Figure 1: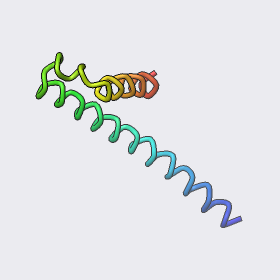
Figure 2: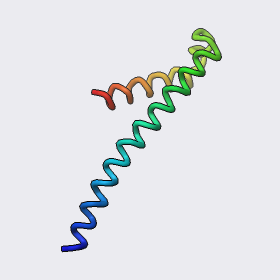
Figure 3: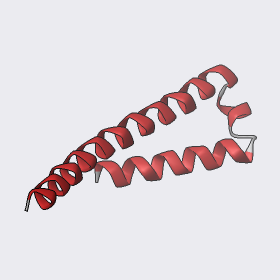
Length: 67
């Protein structure tokens, strides 16, 4: 019985921590993209296919996280 309660508590804590970690990493990833856009300028930023991919992934992740 005690082991089951401990596992439940660990699971709940893990869910809470993973939600916060997901938000922190997504926010840092979006900030990195915005700083890169500002530093390079939009035209130069979107010339790189990797930057376009980053932009699409971060926008998609943001819509999944907030929606």
